Image 1: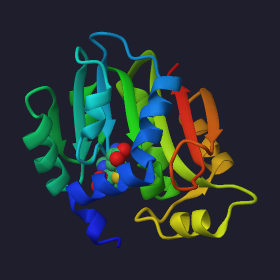
Image 2: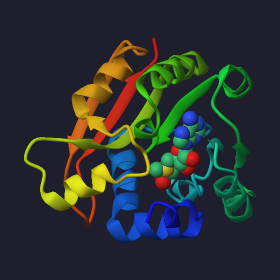
Image 3: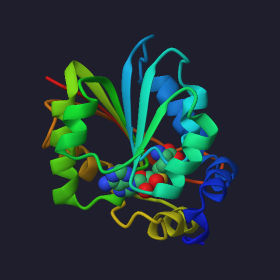
Amino acid sequence: MKHVLELPALYQAYQEIGGFFGARVTAIRDYLDLRAGARVIDIGCGPGYILRHLPADIDYVGLDIDEPSIAFARAKFGTRARFEARYFDEAAARELGPADVVMMNGVMHHIADDDLVATLRLVHGALKPGGVLFTLDGCYAPGQGRLEKWLLDNDRGVHVRSAEAYRTLLEAAFPDVTLHVRNRLSRLPYTFAIGVAKAA
Ligand SMILES: C[S@@+](CC[C@H](N)C(=O)[O-])C[C@H]1O[C@@H](n2cnc3c(N)ncnc32)[C@H](O)[C@@H]1O
């Protein structure tokens, strides 16, 4: 299952059938204010389908360490956005910032604590003052059923955490963090931790 999801089109089909993609669209609509002309950096953009649900007049660049995902995103959406196969490191933060919005949809749970805090600090530095980091990840919560727990335990990202653990990591880099916990956003049972962190 995990290897099959390495194929960009199958990954996207799974996201849509399970309702996980719709969850991203709803969360962005509910918690992110995207203005015309906004500079957006999407870290871990995957196959890039989220672009279909963002305003057409933003300045979007998607990054991912997975080359097949970036090749797929370029072929499908390359006429309206830029996609780069690279890590979000100091050079990327310098070259691509300052941004109004950074998105990490389903990405924090792929990154271990120390690396994640270092990445979040770079994100803070790449945002304009008052700019926003938007995050969305599956999270552990009390009372979850067997299927939900199985989905979280078997995710390709091996750093699925509780909502509070995500908050603690976001707060290590950002002064102003709001965390929303939502559990009716997808077709399959799943709890999402959605972070909105504002740069100083
Ligand atoms: C669960 S997928 C999410 C893809 C897409 N954002 C979405 O919402 O469907 C996680 C993506 O993050 C990428 N990724 C993991 N660690 C990363 C890192 N350090 N920098 C950039 N991308 C990363 C993976 O290659 C993968 O494509």
